[in-house]
Length: 311
Image 1 (cartoon, rainbow, N blue to C red):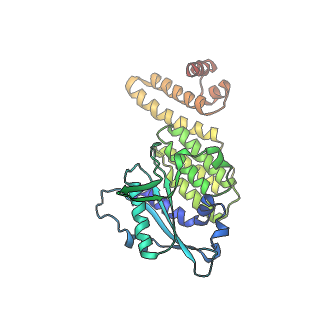
Image 2 (cartoon, rainbow, N blue to C red):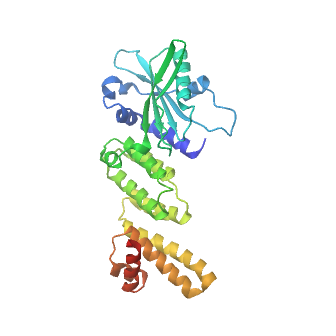
Image 3 (tube, one colour):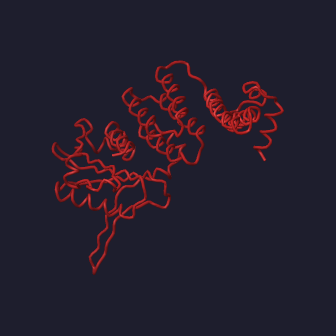
């Protein structure tokens, strides 16, 4: 099981009540939350044993027993599947789960497929089969993370919305540079800490965010962890623009060293200053004068780069 699988399984257990309300707003009227939830992972493996082929993709699934408000012993099953890649057999697998679970428990089952993949065209909603007058149609609940509105999620007071925002940030990893990803991850952390959630919920969500959205460069991870420590200790925090300046200087020093070895110290310094200024122009609201002062270059140098970037 890879890291994302473990994170998904953990957050579904930690925030299961929030998960239910996120997808079923009137869940508290239908399900008796006071009786708790029973996670039947071992039972699920007995019904659907993991494939022994270690090279085959693993699937993130949960089976939960919940009690309804219709009677003391009236319970149902909730099957959750998190699918991280396009798979033409996915709908059939969802039906296989349903058929085996119903055969074993003879209880009502509702299923949720959370599609966390990067393929927009992949959105299975049913498994259907027909032959000589016999027809089968199995439909299940689906939620395509890639299609969700960031604005709506940010406005939500349900903690599970933060989970979706985190996954959306991870999906953008190849579309943005390291600096933009750092800004995005830090903004998610700040928004999370501003929410009126319990300490347990904030800790669970923060751990999910910290480990689900990963950086390519070790130095970026160091910057995030330093700011994370300040955020969680409720100390005065460095602004995002100052963090960007720190990251830009680190990248600039590294680039400058490389260019210096190849083309000389002066050329390396020029390349370093250019990289730092471009990063700050793209990611901050600093004026030309502020950037010139921070980097140690002429204002005209910053103005020229700004003009080039806006062409």
